[in-house]
Amino acid sequence: MTNEPWLDDDEQKAWRSYLQMRRTLETHLARHLQREFGLSESDFEILVNLSESETGRMRAYELGEATQWEKSRMSHHLTRMEKRGLIRKEACEARYPEIVLTEEGLAAIKACAPGHAARVREFFVDVLGRERVLALGQAADDVIDAVDKHQRTDCPPEVRGCG
Amino acid sequence: MTNEPWLDDDEQKAWRSYLQMRRTLETHLARHLQREFGLSESDFEILVNLSESETGRMRAYELGEATQWEKSRMSHHLTRMEKRGLIRKEACEARYPEIVLTEEGLAAIKACAPGHAARVREFFVDVLGRERVLALGQAADDVIDAVDKHQRTDCPPEVRGCG
DNA sequence: CGCGCTAGGTTGATGTGTCAACCCCGTCGA
DNA sequence: TCGACGGGGTTGACACATCAACCTAGCGCG
Image 1 (cartoon, helix red, strand yellow):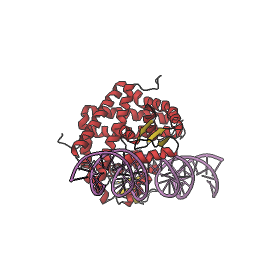
Image 2 (cartoon, rainbow over the protein chains, first blue to last red; image 1 turned 90 degrees about the vertical axis):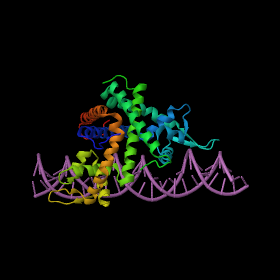
Image 3 (cartoon, each protein chain N blue to C red; image 1 turned 120 degrees about the horizontal axis):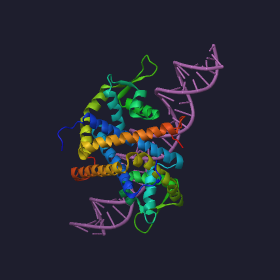
Image 4 (cartoon, protein in one colour; image 1 turned 30 degrees about the vertical axis):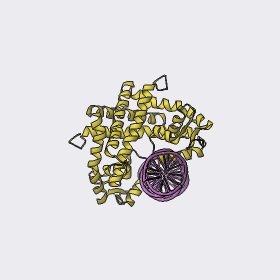
């Protein structure tokens, strides 16, 4: 797909800026979530998914689809969240237990969502402007597709790490 | 700076795509580095900085400037890297010890840099194209500035988390 | 039937990041 | 001279992510 593996100076600079933004933005947002509401970004992600579902209950598997987490990460994290009362694991007739949003979990997400959204707007959407945000979204989708495709093509069996 | 804190659907979609890209790209690159060379992205970052310096030796403080890590993270990580023989902490006349790139560390970075760069090219630069990469770099710088400025203005003393 | 496969889920070990508290030494003002 | 302050650096406790190994129930097939 290319003949020169190296990055030239401009490309390298852009890449490093990207890395820096990723770090800055993540720590900044995470810090607020943590300090103001005692939630990590991981907690937030789970709570958002549950609260956006019709019933407030999903299987771990569905959460995995939505978040793209490893199953072990999901399991560990749900255990921790249950311990803190944000969710509950409930057995049901079907084989696998359901993950249920508790009152407390619902309250938590309702409390922090507006502030979080506002911060995303303040430091991302408003800084870049709508045009660039949408363009970046598109770019992100392209990258995701490329990596996805690569993983699917290059590793027929299940060796997800490839070569 | 804005009157409506919420994100509309398009903005939200773009934001989530960004989050997804961040995750996908990071895990993909990290996995290769780990499996092929036994290096984490953090290791890589330190090694790059050291190897790019004139002398292969820097103070922890300088590494902190370059990477923007917390000092405790730096300390922990350097300790781990020293244990693995990638770097050495060397006392010198000046007050603080210097972090020195070992032979082994230099070999490691030389071994993995080309493959890593190639992967960044394959999944980022080539997917987006030079134009969009540079634009993204600029966007990233804008975001970094905004967050930086906010942290500086909003917290005169040292309460970095703000309120 | 019974054998093994597969897929959802759990567990434990390990490496990593963050926070808060601390140590150490140089500096500066009283 | 001395004490407090501040900044570079370390430490310990804890939350988190990843890997590999495992458990278990449904399924296909002999």
